[in-house]
Image 1 (cartoon, helix red, strand yellow):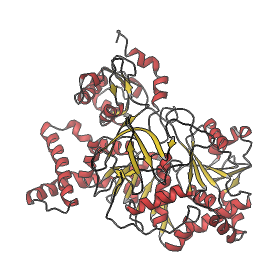
Image 2: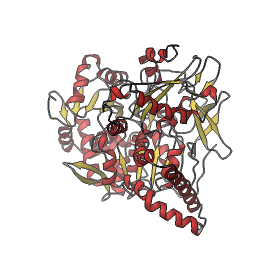
Image 3: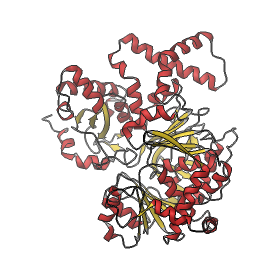
Length: 606
């Protein structure tokens, strides 16, 4: 099934591949701001002409360092403008960029750089450089180390500034020849899936894969193009952020890079006032908690008013979207709700968000409806690294909450006999590098087997109902989809993470973590010890959480209800190995790491 749209496509750079994308963007959008970033507490801008000047120097400098077409160049760096300069510089020189998550351990860095046979690694600073040095003897192909910030112990590495200096001494024609020689079938990037099981696999994605994806996005006006400001904090090592970066450049938009501190994301939204916000569910869940915190102390009538305001907001905005008249009484009530609630929520996002997109993990429809009612459409899409990021997309004009939208034009979808979603299109990857894995991610007769269980309705809207590997089958033979009740629980202001367990067990149980900011603030009000470890075991906290679990359980049949729970004395984290860089739970790691605690929930003693 394919999505269709009557909206005219946005004007793109007209690039043939990703290799000439930035050069063409500089020709078309020369004086438009391409980059906005924070320097010494102030936001500064660089135009497309200025960015291309930097990219050109980096590309020629890499050539001077001996980088050949097809060579793999790793980038180990947080999301910042230099990531983009390094990415486009290497790509323009005909190299294949291999991102490494900046949160990776030295051993994980070694796996990516070694498996991809990288000859160069561009590190952010001395800390990241130290990771590569620690495993350098296991990387026989590695011959060049480059560092963005040369402060500290960076001996033996070439600074990015020196790379640029080298590039100024070479003829731009060399870079042009390199980029023009790149074809759509050539690899553009190897992206190693963050993976919830096993070592990461390097998805080989071609210039043609991403060029087709950009064209599909342009046809749906995913970004409006010039004057669109995108706030980007997601790791550029992930395909989601990478696609947004490429699309912004292709259409002449501005990327506002976060300042590097994840605790400042919400304040920076107010500063940058983005019109487009790509994110993962956890950020929207946090903002939802922030925006609805007062409900915990609200009276029954106030709660009723809140829910009526959300319902009213959805109703009126749907009428406006369809171009239908809004009854005078509903408009008056809407205006009053806007003054009391909606505008305050928009202000959290900077007051200018045209659209936000959430991906990488499920999110509760109630949260999406709340933001939509307030005038911040947060819409779901679906895709995988193996689909060059995306396969389905929702628009403000065409969406259904609880679904991940419809297929991009040019992409086909179908459901296999066992319920698995299959995808076919020009964006499908070219296999895993040095790994002929034939399980999830296999391509058979052009169809990618996603590993996700889904349904497609009569209008083509896709609903993801679970992962084939994540489905829990109880000892009684009941199939359970953990994401449903997990999402319900994560709507609570007290709960940060929820992981259901119960495969081949008599009943499901759940492992929870507390939202430290919220629970500590509550504890202080209650005169309780304001320390997460103590609170995780406190009877009053367990009573608080039990109330939330009862609320969530009420939605499900008795056999699906969670019978017991345990609360960890810390949150799940990337550092602990329990979360991927996009904050997805590594279910198998959690089950193994906390096996004894989970076993105890099935003991008669509890």
